[in-house]
Structures are given as C-alpha cells and as structure tokens.
Amino acid sequence: MQAIEERKESILKTNLKYFHHADFDKKITSKKILGDIPDKRKFELESKKVLNLRNTNKQPEMRPCYEEPLLTREQEYHLFKQLNFLKFKAKNLIEKLNCKKSIKTKIEKIENLQVKIYDLRNKIASSNFRLATHILKNDFKSYREKRNLHNYLSDAYMDVIKSVDYFNYTLGNKFSTYCVWVLRKNFFRTINLKKNKKNEFYSIDDNQQESQTSAETFLTSEVHQKENAIFINRVIETAKKRLNTRDINRQILIIEHYFGINGKERKNLEEISGLLEITKERVRQLKEKFLISMRETVRNTDCKNVL
Image (cartoon, rainbow, N blue to C red; front, side):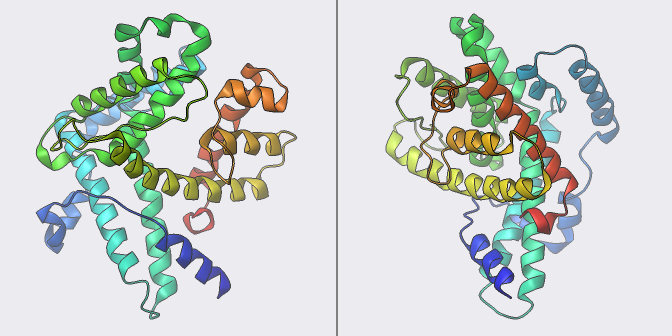
C-alpha cells in the first residue's frame, strides 16, 4: 500500500500541458486519433532509409538525427494530435486519483499513458533533430569548431524535445517554423552568454507576442524541467538495480549535474570534467553511455516498474 501511495504522490506532482481539440470529447473519434500514422507504408520505407543512413559511419553526436524520418504535414499533425490526446486522457485520470475506488488500476493506466507520452514526444522530436544541425551549419560559424559541436548539439536536441510540449498544433502551423524560431533564439543566447550563466529555455506559443518576458517563459519551462527530472530520477533508480558497471555511480553523478537534478547545480561538460578530474571527452562518453542505457532500460522494462 505504501508503494501505491508513493506512486500516487509522484503522479500528482506531474503537470501536463496539452492543447485541446474538440475531437477529444467524442468517444467515437478516439480510435481514429490513436490509429496508424497517415501514409504508414511510406513512413515505414522512409524509416528503413533513415536507419541505413544512421549505420553509415555517422558521428556519434549526429546519430540522433537519423532515428526517425522526416514527417509530412499530415503525419506531423496526426502525431501532435495523438500526443495531446494522451496527455488529455492522463490528466483526466489524474484528477480522479483522489477517489480511493480502483486507485491501483488508475495509477497503472496513468503510468502506461506516461510512457506512451514520452515515447511519442521523443519520436516527434527525433524527426526534427536535423533542423538543429541545419541551423548550426547555416547560421553559426562556431558550429565548425569541433570543441563546441557536441555542446551545441546536445543543447539543441533538448530544445527540440521541449519545443514539442509548447507547440500549439491546433493553429495549423508547421512545427518546423516554431522550432526554428526557438532554436535560433537559444543558439544566439548560448553563444553569447558567459559560461557560468545558468541556461534558460526561451519558448513562446504561436498565438503569443514576442514581447512575452523571459521571466514568464523561464517559469513555464521550470514546470517541464521538474517533470523531466521526475522521469529521469525514476529511470536512474531502475538503472541502479539493473546495471552493474564500474562507471555507473560516476555516470549518475554526471547526469545529475548535467540536468541539474537531485539538488545538484547544473553544469556543462567542461565544469563536470573539472569536478571529477577527468577529461571533458571522457565526461561526454560517460554521459552518452548512460543515456543509451537509460533509453534501453525504458524500452525493455515493464512500464509500471519504470514510472
């Protein structure tokens, strides 16, 4: 019973933001919303092509760009509508958690929905990671400096993932338009801020004006940072039980500092290398090693044991 209460408390701390569609209130349309992606056959063929590209000696930092194919406008809309519908369903269940009746069943349903939400969000983001490299190549000379490449790309990939949550698909705009705006804002900020300044995530809804203050956008981003931190922590706990490697404790320490969770101050790779007295490249390798293990853990572990 204690485990159930802990899972309940963790879920109640979750803050799901979604953009509502009128179809969400119609039971008859839910099957269509959760159905196959448009042009499924073509999507599967493109997925195979992307996999082949990924296996042709791509640099490690470029591999995330070749996990999912580019989406058509119809496919993109379908996935965003599906993502927000899953959030809508999860939020409705969360609001009913205070009712003690069938609480275990509700928790398991919510946890299963959370896994689907994270997987779908990452799927959409992976289809757009190439936007980040395209902008770096065309807009920023510092991209050509190999010592900065990994840092910029890592930050860019996180920005794309966060942008998925903020994008209002109901307005009919392409996600790439919004995401490019966010990436350029953040690249400009990253390149010009001092190394020791804490990162902020600038985000804006499509129907808002650019005059929205950075303080407001920072507070909004904090909600999602906390939500992501809860998820990462759960996977870390699972990894501790399942992974038996010499570097696991060091990997976890790197992840905690890199994402600024568990009371650790957020640090970049160079700062972490100084803290652990190892090279920056070794820090990067350990971070990537853990993230790969983390992804495999989520894929191979039963939902309720991870979340």
